[in-house]
Amino acid sequence: MSSKQRVSVIGGGLAGCEAAWQLAEAGFPVTLYEMKPVKFTPAHHYKGLSELVCSNSLKADRLASAAGLLKAEMERMGSLLIPCARKVSVPAGGALAVDRELFSDMVTEKIASHPLITICTEEVEEIPDSPAVVASGPLTAAGLAESIEKKCGSRLSFFDAAAPIVTYESLDKDIVFLASRYDRGDADYINCPMNREEYLAFYEALVGAERAPLSEFDKEIFRVYEGCMPIEVLASRGEDTMRFGPLKPVGLTDPRTGRRPYAVVQLRRENSSGTLYNLVGFQTNLRFPEQKRVFSMIPGLADAEFMRYGVMHRNSFLDSPKLLNSDYSLKEDPLLFFAGQITGVEGYIESAASGILAGKNLARKLSGNEPLVLPRETMMGALAAYISDETVKEFQPMGCNMGILPELPERIRDKKAKYQAYADRALAALEKYLSEKEG
Image 1 (cartoon, rainbow, N blue to C red):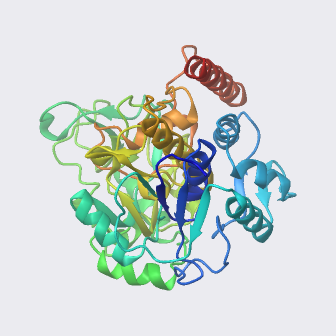
Image 2: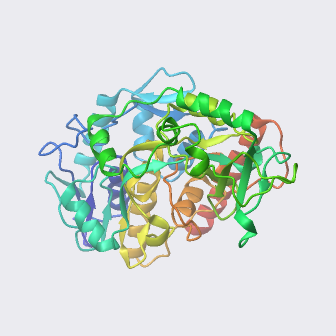
């Protein structure tokens, strides 16, 4: 039996299981709290740990992709879940997809058989005293959510109404222009000007676009947060409604014409490096292919590379840039860590990756070592940097994508070659960093 301090991990999803595994592998006894099967969320049905709720896919597996690179980094970091996924994979083209039940059963067996992990099946309603990792997921139960809100000063969101995010590199610089309304302050916004013909074509496409269905519990919470109106709903209230809302052109002059545009879509910087921009006021419930089709009609976005599409669904997540360090610890309590979607990383493997770092870093702190803050060139490091970027004013959750990595020193036009260069640089940076830390 280990003589080290016992650690609590709240949540038996992907992030919680990775965090518990990393802590136990470092020699710390862990109590893993999971409320199933005593209580299920509206989205969960299977009794086992690491249940995959929506899709059974863990995204692309080729190295020259954001998801493939992230999985490669996770395996180098000692992931529990990725090797399990490979053992129960099912054919899925270039993606890593799994048999859900076999995957959950395998992870559950490995966690349950670890001599330093104790699974406790009960609902946790209060944040435990640190040291602990909270990985309670996007559907955190009411009691624990209230405790988190109290601990974090009401900086916990319950509904994700997020606008699409595009790369700066993919914008048409001959059309868009930098300016703030009435030239007030710095030119912080990228503006996409529309003439009347362009606006009306966009309006007609938007109001006729296919929307994604909402689940019953999403409908209920959407009624509570009706102020987060989807852009397509706003448009349906009248032809000019958007022009008096997020697309109002007042105070702006198109440098190409010297006149005020008929309408303007504004893009706001999403990260400190300026590689990503979000469409201001464009929270939406359109299906992803429809977002690509309709939003690409906006002047300057014809070839836009979408790093995240807009979403509207129930999703408990922290205002992490205000609350968390880049090692996933709480700024006000350095031995209390958060992991998974509650931190603002979005997706299965992203959640699991954050759990790896949270578990490793808590173990390192308890052992008197400096936490791991991976290089920004790595996908794991870039995600951690994104959720802890204090310059972000309106935080939106983010999945892995090449747009959050620092730009390459050379411009590579071929997308496949460019992504391979990103991956090669990331793995080399990770190997160098870990060899220094482990050496």
